[in-house]
Structure formats: C-alpha cells, structure tokens
Length: 218
Ligand code: DX5
Ligand code: ZN
Image 1 (cartoon, helix red, strand yellow):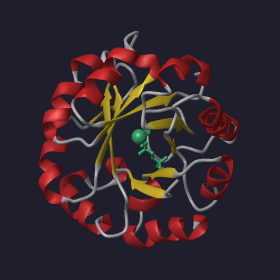
Image 2 (tube, rainbow, N blue to C red):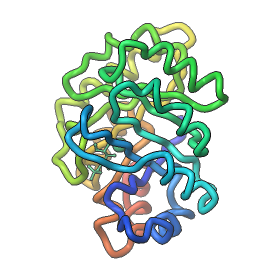
Image 3 (cartoon, rainbow, N blue to C red):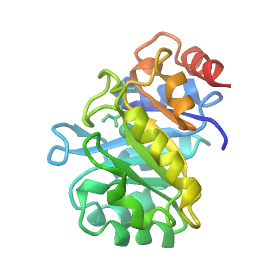
C-alpha cells in the first residue's frame, strides 16, 4: 500500500486557506477537509462551499471527512463541490450502506470512519465496498488533541480483517494526534494514510513538517 500524508486544513489559517494549500501542494498526497455540524461533534467547521472554493486551487485529491448527522442529506453537495473521497462516520447514520452506494455511484472513493468507542465489527458488512477505513485516534471535533494509543490495536485489527475479508481492498487511515512521536507506531500497526493537522499547520514551515513525517515512515 502506498504511504500517504494528508494535511488537515482544520489547523490552517482560515483567513488564508489558499496560501495554506499552496504550502503543502508539492509535499502532501491528499488534502483532508473536516466538516462538522455542531451536532454529531461539538464544533462547527467547513461546508461544501469551502470544498468548491479550494477545488480549482490544488491538484491534490480532496478528502472530505463528514462529521455530521444524516450524512445522506449532504453527500450530493460535496460530490458537486468536487470532493474526490467522502468519509462517513459509522455512528452518524443507520443508512451507511446507502450512503456508500451514493458516493460510489457518483464515481468517488468512499470510506468509513470509526470513533474511538466504535468497534470495527459494526462496519464489517461494508468492508468489501469501500476504499478506506479511517480509525479516529482522538475523539472527533477538534485539532490538537492527544493521540489515543489504545487505537493502535484497532488499526491492527482493520489490517487483519482486510486479509481475511473477501474482496476487501481498502486503505487504512489514522486521524488525530498524528505527529513525529506517534506516526511510526501507526505505520507499524498497519496504517498507510496519515492525517496531520496541528503538526503540519501550527508551524512556520508546513512543507518541512510533512517531509519530516514522511521521513519517519519511508
Ligand atoms: C479532528 C479532525 C482531524 C484534525 C486532526 O476531529 O478529524 O482531522 O484536523 O488534528 P490534529 O492532527 O491536530 O490532531
Ligand atoms: Zn478529520
């Protein structure tokens, strides 16, 4: 599996997102965009207009992490806005299968996200359908939180299940508290895609930070 770094613009300067994106354009593999509705998580962030505004500014694939209730009501707008991947929380809808179908039928990549308290078993029926499993390594809602080492076991389990589930071929992503101290453990557990917000953007030189992370896993 290719190793990928996904800078999360949640920790970027919101008054100058275009500049933030340009800083990671040549070193990042994906751009991670957090969408929060104030219900599913206790915070608000970004909407389809931001995705649409960033789309022409970057060649990086746009990965939209939906932290919203009733994601089925929003996927169309993010598809139209130019998202390449849409990640849906398992806990956010009773219609996970349907939401994934909607995303895939539109030709996008689809992923499922697991909160720290959500077992992997809850998404086993959709594993053959999806392109990515995102294991939250913090409680979702805010950047800059401490990594939860207990989640490494879940990452390893996600990797194990990929080997034993017919037709499963998904990337394994971690999000939350990923930094120079934690990325190695995540990679060793089986993760291949690493979201990093504050480690990249709460720093003078975001590109150097991305390169630093890459150097620790390649
Ligand atoms: C948190 C978001 C993350 C956030 C991670 O709910 O999903 O994408 O940007 O931030 P750091 O890397 O600072 O933990
Ligand atoms: Zn995220």
